[in-house]
Image 1 (tube, rainbow, N blue to C red):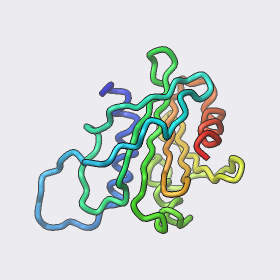
Image 2: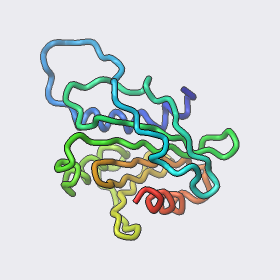
Image 3: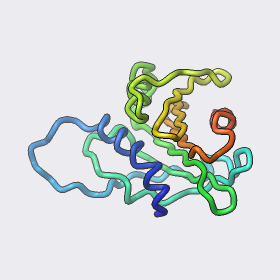
Image 4: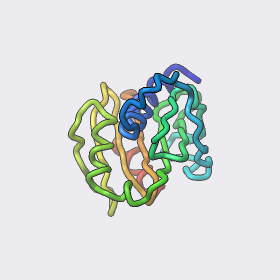
Length: 171
């Protein structure tokens, strides 16, 4: 996996797993790579604005959890030529009632960025949690039983426009 992809997806994976894990089971078991079903590539549009969207290998960034809320995961790179400008992680939750709770959504979104208090903006009827994460732009939104986490590098010229376009494409 390209180093930049690992850097962009690791905080998301850690937030998902730390929020999904229960307490210490006392077994002292070694960590292993998680085994999740992969979200199909057709869950994402082929292009968004001027970026080509395609699946990325993310398996090395995830650690297994016995009590994870997610049962499928996909990471998609958004590139212009060969340069990665953004990633979007799609996580499918195994309990639609949990993910539908706005308090759960806000709490989970707050664990992903550097700020515990994401700002909420509306894109159409969709609530999107925006937060800083270093110099990157992070956007998080929930559709049915899925959570989308968009990470945009600071070099991309239109991060908010990209958030809007991707939210509209996944609605």
